[in-house]
Length: 183
Image (cartoon, rainbow, N blue to C red; front, side, top):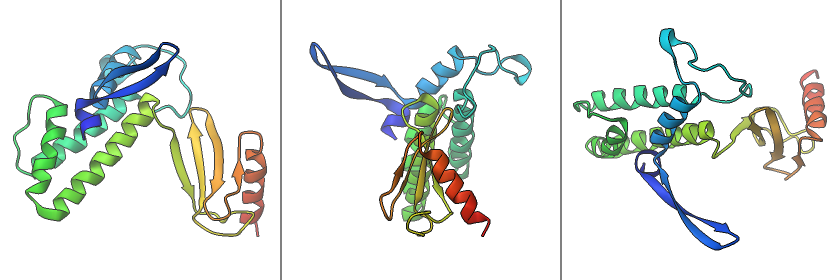
């Protein structure tokens, strides 16, 4: 919740030594990115036309989804709408706790989901997909993980046999999966 709504401090190594860097909360960063990268203009379209990678999540879209879901959770808890989204997110922990263990678990799951979506939209993390297909090397199901960057599959790995594929060998994995699907 802190990283999503409040912010954090990281230590980055530079040639001059370690440097502390303060970061805004992810919600504030999404708002800034939406304002500076086109966001939503009049009539619901893009305010600025620019080339974007095909799998890039729009920061404004992620921000709107987080806001919609957070306000719905707050309303279900009977809370009045606070002025700004970071405050709603900070208060969700209290509202969840008031509903017991189930409420806390629901809020924690939502916060994890929102944080991951924000980190992907802002470029801190890459998307990860777990495939249903069996690994072509060990035949284990539900163990193939594919990491996606803005342009498609970046690398893949099997959690069972530890086989790995990179951009250069991703075509081999795709071919093996397609061959296996035809049998």
